[in-house]
Amino acid sequence: MTNKMWGGRFASGPAAIMEEINASIDFDKRLSAQDIAGSRAHCEMLARTGIIDREDASVILKGLDTIASEIEAGNFEYSRALEDIHMNIEARLAALAGPVAGKLHTARSRNDQVATDFKLYIREALLHLEGLLHDLQRELAQKALLHAATVMPGFTHLQSAQPVTFGHHCLAYVEMFARDRSRFADARKRADECPLGAAALAGTSFPIDREQTAKALGFSGPAANSLDAVSDRDFVLEALSGASITAVHLSRLAEEIVVWSSPGFGLVKLSDAFTTGSSIMPQKRNPDAAELVRAKTGAVFGAFTQLLIVMKGLPLAYSKDMQEDKVPAFTALDTLSLMLAAMSGMVGDLEPDKEAMAKAAGEGYSTATDLADWLVRNLDMPFREAHGVTGKIVALAESSAIALENVPLGDMQKIESGITDDVFSVLSVEDSVKSRTSFGGTAPSNVRKMAQKWIKRLESDPTSG
Ligand code: ARG
Image 1 (cartoon, rainbow, N blue to C red):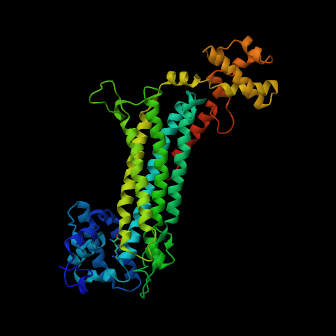
Image 2 (image 1 turned 90 degrees about the horizontal axis):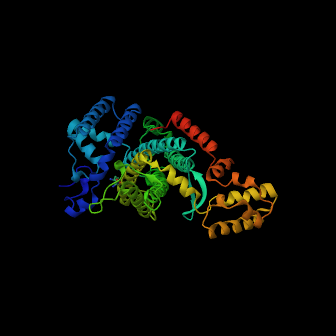
């Protein structure tokens, strides 16, 4: 059987394998709601401009309503022979409304139709992701407030460097996820031009009103160039590039959760809700959710790369290659949604081991910089010289295997005679973090203020999901 929609010139139906490679209905049926919305807007416009009769438009709109409820109820029969969502819906419309259904495709092509449907879908998906990011930020900001003064080791090269607070570390991620949200919101701003009415590639000879359809679908206006309108998939690429950066952030946090919860570090605990046991080693509590978030990053990057490769080198305007934009986009955005939701759950579940954190924070002479700063401040020593003096005191402490604050004053004075008893007021980890009051620094007073600011901001944020 030839395809009813474009089969006029074709003597026979496609080879089975052709149908297999060509049909997109298995995945683009996800665009049914957007396709119906686009058809409604187009039909209203055709009637308003007098391109089709009002009565015909009413029949078409009624048919579209029926199709929408059939799909909603799950009794719409999708057919592979009809290739894609656009032709499945159009064929059903013809069955319901008769030949008048054929008028809907006046001044329209599947090329502008699919670009419009997909743009609508991506805009909604971005909004959904922004909501999930918002939820995750709120979890992190609340943890930060709770642990504004909980000291932990701050790392460089994964080695204890200077003490920070756990709250400060949580807020670092709140900032990253804020940038991710703004990237998605920014992508939505550019995905605000409606392709509908570009028709196949060149526009149309019918007196259509593209402003009307654009507004009806929630776009700010029509895309200005018909060739660009049907060829453009930047909105998908931007969504996937933003998704990839978000996945990087999630993966870094996931990695930290894996490392921190490992017995070697023992800084945080995940409950049974976010861990699994081993079938052979009864003592194990594995951070599987974190590991899976870390690993799923691969699917997101893969999808982004895949679509970049599909699009590169495509001549204008539409080529069937572009049908291959959907699976990677759905995969990446679904995967990212799952990663975000799982991470929100884990952050809420995560409990820092305060004692272990404080102990680890003091290890490795992490307050050595505070000692050097004391020398600069109190003895007017150039920092480089203070660095050298501190190095000698650290070496001394190391040789006697004691903490910096336990080195006797007399021993310190042998290295630098100007050192007084006051030095001990900066050598504990608590004093160290308390002193870091510079803007953006880890002092508990700063962290408390920032966490409160974020919580308030997230509460009043209109795009909250
Ligand atoms: N299923 C197609 C896609 O997703 C719709 C557009 C088909 N256009 C065409 N000229 N064959 O890209």
